[in-house]
Amino acid sequence: MLEKKKLAPFFKEKLDGKLSENYIDLHIHTTASDGFIKPQLIKKLFANTSHLISVTDHNAIKSNIQLAEESNLNIIPGIEVGCSDGFELLIYFRTQRELKDFYKKYVKPFKMDYDITRTKQNHEHFLKHAAKYNSFISIPHITGIAQKNYLRNKDYIEEIIQTVDAIETYNHSMPQKRNKKAKKTRKQNQKYATFGSDAHIKQSLISFYEGQEKKFFNTTPLKTILHNLYSIIPLISKRIEYIFQTN
Image (cartoon, rainbow, N blue to C red; front, side, top):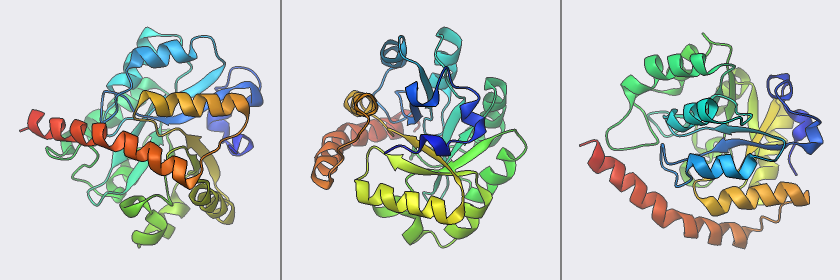
């Protein structure tokens, strides 16, 4: 289940109506980075729904800005920054102006030519400069698969946990067992919670949306594996395309 009651005031004050009545997704990827979700789909999906969302593309802000400027969506300015060693941070801002300034100064100049999800800077760079803004930082998929299992393979993770505001305790691309471990870690460290679809394709976004409508999520290990296998081929093709575009 989503820990809506553990959302920070940073997000709650932006809600339209009651917390329980809002669809909330704070981790969405679009065609601006390695996703296949077009901004037009997001507009259509949430047009008549009480919601709070954030498009957090990898080292990109084009779709977030476009949706904020061209729609009436309740959207948080956000970005998922990738560090040189593969670690990632979700950073949210109060205004689009802050997001644009942060991206222009501290993300864009350090983007890699061959990896859409990483930059040439480490976590210290992003934590230091995000602190200059009225930002809110969460660690995504802290118990993820392979390199994204930060609890297991990042020896500095405990230090970062103490620095950030929140931990993502539900990621729709992961089995419940791993999300429960993330939730336990949040509780132990008394942090706020964030959660989201981490959707890169239309099916993931809609699945997460429908799950909130039903008030439950049936993310069994097998279902998650099959879903991720369905997603991985287009994601690989998108990243290969990025390499050729930047070289």
